[in-house]
Amino acid sequence: MMDSSLSRRLRRYLLAGAILLLLGSIPLIQQSINYSRVTGDLVEELVVMPGEFVTNFIIGGFRGIAVDIMWIEIDELWHHGKWFEIIPFLRAITWLQPHFIEPWALGAWHMAYNLYAYAGDAPDRDKYITQGIRFLKEGLSKNRNGYRMWFELGWIYYHKLKHYDDAIRYFRGAMRFEHPSYIDRMVAHAYRKKGDIESEYRQWQRCVAAFPEDDYHQNITLRHMEAARDKLIEAGLLK
Picture (cartoon, rainbow, N blue to C red):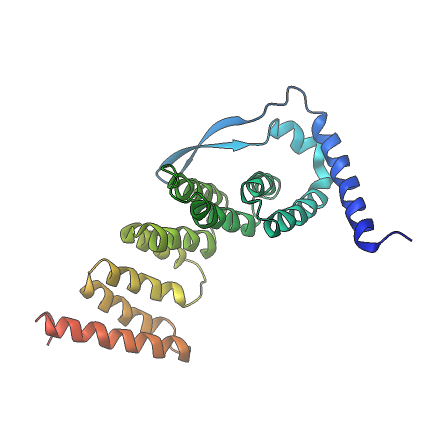
């Protein structure tokens, strides 16, 4: 009897082969197509799968199967450390299901953190952070009505680039929608990191009012607000 894991793998490859045959019917397949798309204040060029309109029509109901197969492949590549081979699969998933948030978030994180670290001391390693931001901005252009994409962008600006004004801008974008309390706190932390203690203190005051029934949030907020207040008193900016 065939081993169950081998049987699952065989079925996966058969499905993958069927999808590849569908994609192979698209005429004039190119290795990559550059296109420009405005997302926020950035005009970007990204690689997309060829024949987008025609393939969209052909693949139709096979989208779910294709995405499932690609997620399985991503998992295997991930566990084998094949970092650079993951990106085309994530790119394809975002094309097939543009409102599926996870591949946007995972792809950007993978570029800005994993590929950046894997590049070591290479002079062009910073390009992976830029690519991650561009990837997220494209995702945001398709998923603007929720907090997640705004927050993911804010986090990379905050944690990876130390661009605190940009981080605050995107965190505040996230706050326009229903969102977890930590995003409000991240705005205050960003003000603290940039040395604007007065704005930090005002943001902690807003945090107290924003989630009055969240005990964990209240405890953290009050502690940080007191520390900011002490700094302002020490600087003579508050009595």
